[in-house]
Image 1 (cartoon, rainbow, N blue to C red):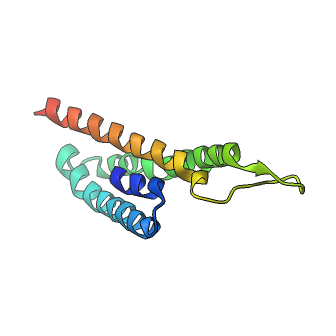
Image 2: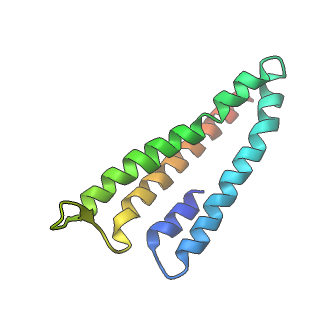
Length: 120
């Protein structure tokens, strides 16, 4: 997923399609894998609660990264208009957002790897 965000940040021709496909596939795989992972790691006794906690990161991450982070960074890159709003045109508008999201993916991958290593 981090690779998809880096492709989006590069903003070369066609990168929007390739990056979106990579990120979308990763989200789909993550949702599909969370069901058997929750049952295998924690059992079926409290499966509903554990599964909902595992997928809580989807709406929470969407709010924090897409709502807050992307909005704040867009406003920092945008130029004020005469009507009182902000506008930004070009690849630089969301480049920092994509880089931050790629770094967050790498950090999450590293934490998951460490947790898996120490669980063995």
